[in-house]
Length: 104
Image (cartoon, rainbow, N blue to C red; front, side, top):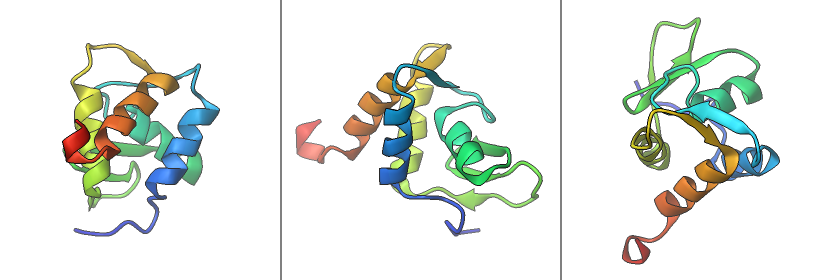
């Protein structure tokens, strides 16, 4: 199922990360607590789940596909060691994801 009705844009995620840059914004490889899931939960006011390129409200059955930037962001975060992730760390990961291919 495709759709991004409740998924704000990457600029919104970046703004949220800057607001929380010195705080823990998630736990890598955690479906309910990865940075993307925490952000979606906070901005939408209900718990979200993020898994393998898809997301959904925790109280809804069907998953929606994530846009490519979000899939790459989650993948990069999940490659970190099993630990909490700060806003600054997530900003750095997002910068790599958004950088043109030649700059990586």
